[in-house]
Length: 125
Image (cartoon, rainbow, N blue to C red; front, side, top):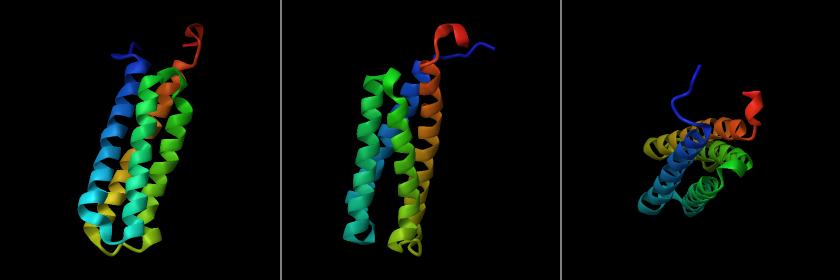
């Protein structure tokens, strides 16, 4: 079955979604402070790392699989952080962090799969 878009387009789409999500996470941690300094710092740092790694993946889609593997782990850390910092009782903050972490993990897994397909020689599709 033919695909409507190439694997490079899928990889870049996943990376663009990760950049937007990372920027939103940084903005959210700055604007709402997330209840504690260490929590806000970690959330902002994780969001910035996700965005930076995704920008690097956009620049080099053929070498992006390891970058998406790292953003996948960062997304899991972001989803776990409300429970680690004990802010899971403050619902809006916990919901945002959990949602951002899960979406980051989902986008990373999609882009990781697409980037792996870029590394397969053309005769093996």
